[in-house]
Amino acid sequence: MDHLVKKLKESGYTETWPPVKRVSFVLQKFAEWFPFENVDALLGDQENITAEFLTNKMVRGQRGGLCYEINPLLLLLLQELGFEAQLGAATIKNNDDNWALDRTHALVLLYLEGERYIADSGFGNRLALSPLPLDGKEVVSPAGTFRLRTHKTEKGEIAMEGLNDEGQWFVCYAFDWEVVPWEKLSDMKQTIHTHPHSPFNKRLLIARTLPDGTQSINEERRHTKWKDGREETFSFQDIQSLLHTVRHTCSPALATAIEKYKEQ
Image 1 (cartoon, rainbow, N blue to C red):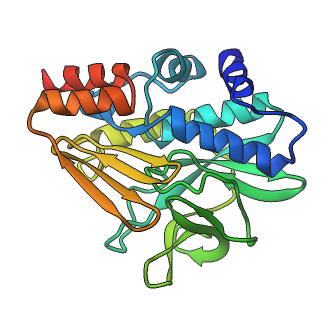
Image 2: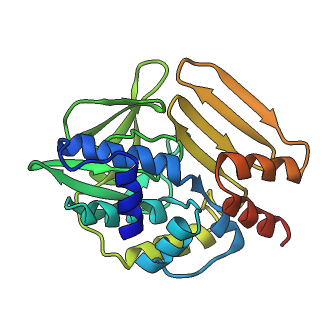
Image 3: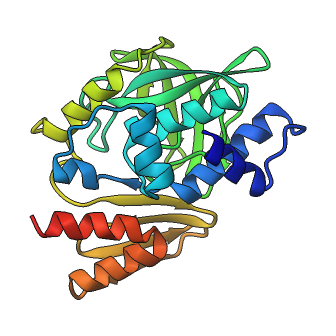
């Protein structure tokens, strides 16, 4: 974690800030540095999730990942910075109002000044960019408005909720406040990589929360939505157009991984 801590401090992080501000800064930097991307799932990678694997892939390798990679790396960094943080697991509720694969969303359980929060840098391009307090104030980011509530569901006693365009709250995912062992991450990866109902093992997806909006990339197009409501879709003419976009908006390493996937 030394390299990541050094990079964070070079970006302006300081220990004198209040805890929520410090964690928010980390979340904003994670959104900048580590895109949500599923190329390893498409390649069928089966390596276990370890601290060394995450460091090699994401820090040294300049790649992103899915929730069970981004949020464990976030967990390790927050612990290195002295925060009381542990691993949790949630079940996502899809747009069709059905539950996704059980407990396959990794997140960070966090205590700040004695209060319970979650931190999540691995929820696609729907990132709060700030820790969410349990039964506290809602948080607004370029991706939308979010809150964490005690809300009993069949998948847990706590729900992370988002605000839709009609002003209605909806459940993004649900969980119980239970610490999950690190070994569970490799099980999540195995499920997401191989299960027929996994949304991440079928086609390319890259998603990011930007300072002024959100962005998603698949094999056909790049779509950007700004927080003022404007939207733009750029269609790729060929694979080289896709690779050029990924190389310049994410990283050369991610473009190389996509090229390997397309050559399969």
